[in-house]
Image (cartoon, rainbow, N blue to C red; front, side, top):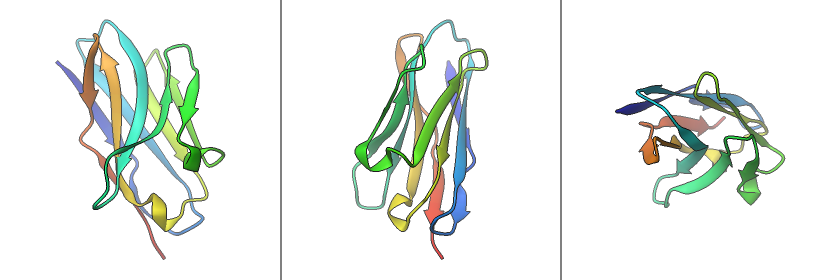
Length: 115
């Protein structure tokens, strides 16, 4: 079994920054894409950013230029640096990956942007 554990969420003022981290653990012999999704109250879960094993990245349009995704293949971790946060970024952020060719989700971490 594979577990994903997120950290780094919290309360931040508009214009501020947060860095989310996600660590995959367990019996892992292969990890594919790693990414972040988010779900705001009353809305569907949406893609934030994804990174491939060779480091290519893709972002949702509203996150381009503000968010940066990165990964450490040796540690099976993925990070999301979020800058210039706005109240519209308030959501639960979920880590996602394909490990051993199966999909896994983290438990989610709350990000609240408010003054």
